[in-house]
Image (cartoon, rainbow, N blue to C red; front, side, top):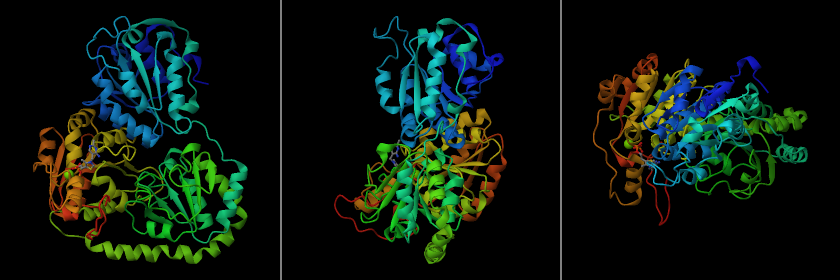
Length: 582
Ligand SMILES: Cc1ncc(C[n+]2csc(CCOP(=O)(O)OP(=O)(O)O)c2C)c(N)n1
Ligand SMILES: [Mg+2]
């Protein structure tokens, strides 16, 4: 336990001050919220204790920003909302973190308990509304217990499968005072970053898995966001390389190994380059830190049931939920990969020789895919083709850049086509809940987490409209973020589905034609409108050069709903009743 005694406050202070002191001891980064009466003592204390708190224009966006901060750093992101609508506005953002396994400590004000349930203004059953949105909801009933319960919040947020923890603080607890001893202010440093602790899979299970892998001719790694939470990048790369096993990834798992690593076979699931074909032809699937949900399995059509699955996950009950696992490895991804590498260390050379032909298939398959996709990837179309936009991102973003992708098409297109140049979480899509509106606030959280790295967010125009107010926040905070607005003047995904499945009967799918670059300029930000694909790369460079204000690049893309789905090609899909095409 640390820190040392001299760093600890003591004496009589408000609950709000005690909360701020604990967050300071936890080394908390930028936090995002909107105040109200209940948490005023906390707001009053953040400045004096040296915390970095930013007013947000919508609490949901505060939670999104905290989520992205946590994805970049693996340290709990912090957000807050006041009593009532402030608290309930957090729900969508917190569910993103819950489903994504992202460590968050959220704080809400609540009614003064002297008057609760007497029609207090803004009162609701907020604890009940928020409880299923978080890993644990901690109701703080005594000012004196604030340090202990903040400790608990960090421990829960970063242990096991990380997640959001909510501290619900009644007004009288925040405003009330207590005489604290310095010993109260301690926090376990291990809990300040996920994973707080690592657990290794059972030895016997590792040996069984190693035997199955050793005899497999075409094993394939299927990796999810758990790789990033466990910081298992090196362990994964080493395991894949020493055993000659190709790696496919989900959208959240991109960057488990560098996309440009010859063993990377790209995205699998709803959209895929070559990975789905390799899954079909595999004889052993090694699933790591991946829930195998709807998108990863193409609505549970993948993988074929005859292929044995080894499933390593930090949540034991997640294993076998969607796809039965032949071998269940319960534990931390990095630890499990290290143990598998060790268990197979003697057979590495043999494995590499046996699988030489197999891994040699990857490059020509990728080339064939690339040849097929080239007309789209290099398209000179005006309006801009989405594949070309992704290609320009790929070419222009430097190795250390972070790309944050919004919930609509933006995430799927870049998930399929954007290549990370090194291992690590440098592609951040909000796949926990896939809400639109994450791009801008998520980009801001990522930019504040990585001040020296270029951060680009890509969002649909619908998603951007939803959270446009945060451009004011990003401007005020001085955030050198580049936001690409994929301007198709539509709720595109919906329109494309109506095109494919409803015979082109479009309902509530069109947006107004807008110039988002002009709007951005009016708000004191940079704004560049791009209609010619050749202008994409210079615009991106210009955006990334701005270090202390955001730049919006408004990219006019196709308005043709027949060209919107991210399959890179544009085949007509045959649809049977009840099908979901994308
Ligand atoms: C909060 C929320 N509401 C609805 C949806 C369903 N949805 C998925 S994609 C999409 C279209 C979003 O439009 P836009 O942001 O412009 O992206 P585009 O698909 O046009 O690229 C919608 C409405 C969602 N993901 N999140
Ligand atoms: Mg759109």
